[in-house]
Image (cartoon, rainbow, N blue to C red):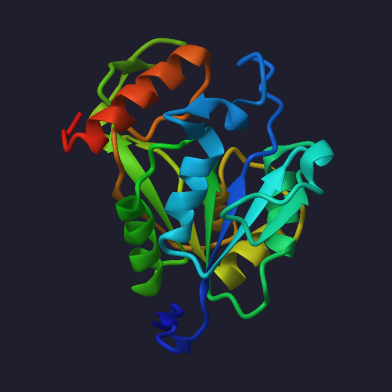
Length: 225
């Protein structure tokens, strides 16, 4: 199905995904993307979900694993010193004919196919970028005093989908940001927010793996968890 550019013209071409799994996991105690999770590895869940929407998947890994083939990935490349460097390494391996690129952090293994579908659909509808977001439930305060209106905030997740040209242009100058939508927006792109999944949390410590396994077991049993 072709996507649409902001001017309304057809932009034919496939969806490709870049799954970022290049972290060393210093806080976690190991490379968390390779940690076991429900009889698989963390990154296997992310690759499977990415494949649900993508014609091709680029996996970005630590340099010492770049030569190792991975099930579910069409291309495996070495990451860089920062997250943005790693995304650029993955993006360089995406074919030029790709119309939409989805970027996902492997450390979010609970992002289901429906979240991938939602962000891709938003880009197909004309956005330069689409991100999943969930409501902020905690009270948020400025460090110098004063509460923030949490109703005006969302916590942003991955996967994030992009018009391929917009993402490539945003990364052309080698800029850094905590996520790619920030770079696209800074370059003048239009970013939309779709409904995220409260369970789609980034794994940061071993306890998060146990919690993720509980959710996955619930999904296997058909529970909403």
